[in-house]
Each structure stands twice: as C-alpha cells, then as structure tokens.
Length: 228
Image 1 (cartoon, one colour):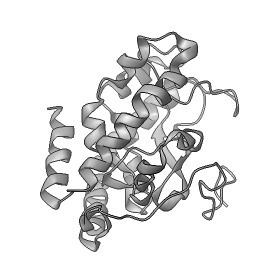
Image 2 (cartoon, helix red, strand yellow):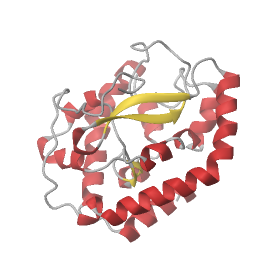
Image 3 (tube, helix red, strand yellow):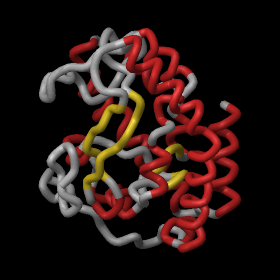
C-alpha cells in the first residue's frame, strides 16, 4: 500500500477504460533495450541532478506551506495506476479540493516558485524515480488522470499498452498547452482539454509509437532538452 492508499494492483478498469493489444506498434516500445536505456539514463540523471533537486526541495519548502512533492494517481502501462512524482508547484489544498486536473497559463493555484519551476520543467525531475522503478519511460505518452480515459476513443486505446513517458511526440507538439487552455473560460478548462486536445495528443503518440526507434527516442529527448 502506498502513501496515497493505492495498491500496485489498481488499474483503470476501475474507471471505465480498458487497454487493448499492441497491434501494429513498433517492437521498440516493448523491448529490453528501451528499458535498459530508461533505467541507465534515469540512474545517471539522478546522480548528476540530486544536488539541484535538493536545492529545489528547499526552495519549495521555504516559499510555501505543504509537502515538497506532489503525488497523484496516473494511468500507466497496461492500465495500471501509479503514483507520479513532481515537485509541488501549486498551493497545497486538502485532498478532493485540488481544482481542475489540467493547468492553464496564469493558473491562480501556482505558487511563485512553482511558476519558475514549470517554466523550465524542473518540477518534472522527480519523475526520474518513476522511470527508474519502471512506472514510466523516458519517451512515451504523458500519463493522464484516470477520469480522462473514458474520453479516449476505442481505436485509440492501444495507447494504454505503452509505458508513459517523461516526454514524447505529443509533448513536443503541445509545448504551449497551458497557453491554449488559458484562451478558454476557466470553468471550461477540463472540458476543452478532453474535447479538443486529448484526442490530438493520443493520435500523435500512437503515430510515433508505430514507428518508434532508439534513434527516434534520442531525437525526442534532445529536442526536449534543447527546447527545439
């Protein structure tokens, strides 16, 4: 049992959504080589970045009340739920009062330190632990909340056979997602995400997964790091 009360056996079958066969997806997505790359890079990254992560943790602790890490149930490979880790960038609120499950540019919940961390994506660094323990990959679809799964069309549900990623093909195309969401009324943020963004992101991730290779993953990682 995890700190959030989640067992490792929880799956998105608890939310009305099911995974499907991998079908025509590239074998690289499920290969031992990809897992070795993930574990090796995550381990090296943690060793290199632990001093920076310690500084960030202190900054989060000193500038706002609440835990240093944000923990949330997300949908993982084969529909299993896992606890994603991030540095907390929003004001701490009681469970059940966190607001919309997506974030818009200028969101009033974001702290001053959080705005800086989100701008340069440093809030995502704790997910290297998720990659190291096998919850996530370096490259794959970004993991979403269970309640958004029901919006994924049946023909798109191959996406649930993939290990979610720190970055991915759709992530590169939707760098400005928070800005897009800021263009709609605040109360419509989650609805707009489901109706206009989620399906496009899923299609992009599946398109890449059909032709995924080691060199393709490395190019996506490089583009993510350089912001190109």
